[in-house]
Amino acid sequence: MSGNTRNCSSYFDARQRDGEIKGLFFLDKTQRDTEGKRRTDLHFLDRERGEISDVLSTTPPDVPLGSTVVTCGNHVYTIGGKILRGGILRSLNHVFRFDFKHAERGWRKVSSMLYPRGLPEALAAQGKIYVFKGSRDCFGEVYDISGDSWVPLCVPSIAEYSGVSRPVLLDSSRSRILVHFSGDRYRSLYAYYYNDKSWVCLDPKFPYWSLTVGIVGNVLYVFHEISDEICSWNAYDVQDKKWLPVKWLTEFSLHQPFTAPVGAPLIHLGNDKWCMVWHSITLNCFEYLIFRMWRNGHGGIYAAAVDGYRTSASFGS
Image (cartoon, rainbow, N blue to C red; front, side, top):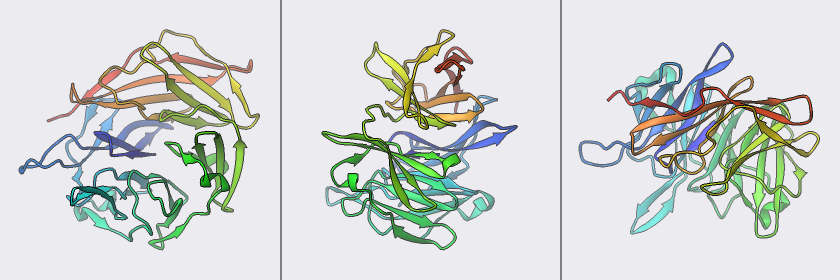
């Protein structure tokens, strides 16, 4: 998974045990150093214990704001971002890597991207990192981890008149990346097949997309909070290309509390379990909701709360 550090914290990977994700690594940008400058700390959230680890590592001070974090294997990468120079925010092409197996080495700079990118979208698949958005000069590019090199990503024709929605989504079972394009006239869902480097339009009229989106099997889930009073889940069968009805079997608070940022990440914990997680600035803790969603055998989706309401995990310090 990947997350963007433009918010206070970024959730970007998970630890799996017994087929289910039990915790999340994340970057926290709420603390300051001895000089009062904002710093970025690496933590681990143990979902079972409800505890957050002490600082595992602190990113270098030259990692810019608005960078994107992505993991691949034992490595964490911070990609791109913006820095204030001469009163102007300028995008950077810097890339830093952290090795969990050699934490004592800290963060090291690797080959820079071909183009500067601020607030890029990125994800990892089969030893490569795919980066979208954040540059007016280049639609996307690909980083080969073993070769430490970047190449441009092939561009679909729709990119000429439509922008990429956040986030891009990995559909690993089909070796593809789902990309939603939105513009003044067009909203379409495309798939990039990274093995043969080709684009396919899955649905030319795909109105629903949000920061809270995930896919398991053939079902794509999209959460929408339309207003303080109205929110909903949409479920879409990517194989049959049709929308499915969603029915909640238990009472569940769909709304995020006021302490949550708009667009809390949706994380698949394994099997039919899902989690929405966010950082509460007011309470200085992490809060998350756990629920289940599955096909009911009657052409629709059933959903049920696991814990009923949000759970909190506090910092140790």
